[in-house]
Length: 220
Image (cartoon, rainbow, N blue to C red):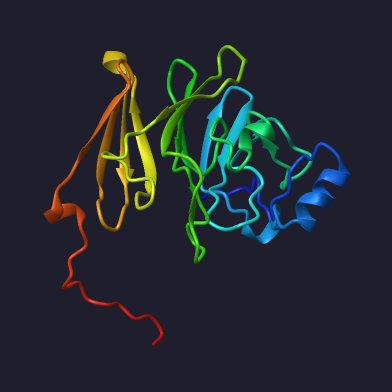
């Protein structure tokens, strides 16, 4: 007989563990927290934590990287804890995380973080707050310090690129392969950790949308 899926976590709206009720009220009143705009994009697991990415496609997303304890059975909708901290998720602070679409955690306990640096990508006025970057947090040490490496503008345009996903290869010093879903300059960005160099692989035939592509309509 077929086993039924069991719901572990589900949210109607996503809330956070605030430093105080007053902080939550302030965020709501200043539109820095709009519950219906907070969406989960990526998920990863390390030891006793489940990490969630919350890209700032819309306004009102107070933290772009958060976690929940892995062993938590008292609710299916736990409140999220910003990671590494609230301060490390501050919009406009280029030492902090701006727009995290995806993360990977390698076999050495190193978290690789893809940060677009641009927020409000689904609004009429997207805003580039910081350079697109790849960031690192060593989870094994427990220090949770963010080390950022900006990607050069000739490789990743801060105003048009959309860094969507990454795959990490820990061999030979460590490489990341990153998809850039830019409408004008798509490609695969290769980042080499040993010397912190990056470059982009481009191919107009396979990566650019065809100008003659058909328009699909659904339900009229």
